[in-house]
Length: 111
Length: 114
Figure 1 (cartoon, each protein chain N blue to C red):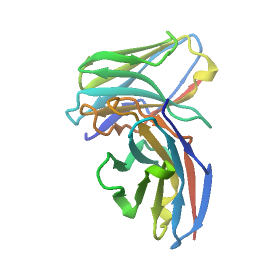
Figure 2 (spheres, each protein chain N blue to C red):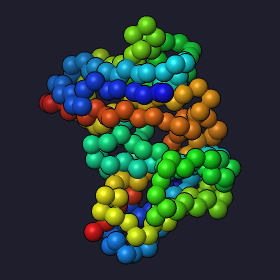
Figure 3 (cartoon, helix red, strand yellow):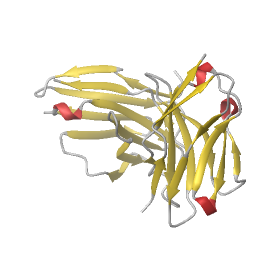
């Protein structure tokens, strides 16, 4: 595997379910990011991790819970989501302040 | 506050004709500017970046962009469109010393007709 990978690529869940999105980067980067891409809206930065420490939480509801166990892996734990949370969730990584490399995204549908 | 405006939500060109995707930014300081492309069901790919070096930036796949401070613009161009260029294009600004905070434009969907 190369670059940034995300699993699953598609996820359908009910509002009472608990699920997790996984991101893995194979680039040796030290920063990782979660973005939300909704239809007709600009990409929104959700969380930033530098050296496994969260450095940015962009006013994200607590039903989204990130976890970064090491600099190569990033998770987004989901629980009691709302239909308006349906979106494409993108993970990215970078080396310091250099350009970010994106994964293919997880298409999430909340019923 | 930093912001970026993509002036066209959709652009349609014929194959072999020039491409122009417009972007204006708002920044109190000299920002870093990027163009990303997103093909259907794919992640974002970096096309090119401006970081206060040469004002004319060349990217991948024949794209280039010119930073014009007086016009606060960073338009993306390509001399001759190819069918494979059909995608969504995002202009992105990041404030100085805040490299982790990418601020995205709304995106421009490029269609290429045969």
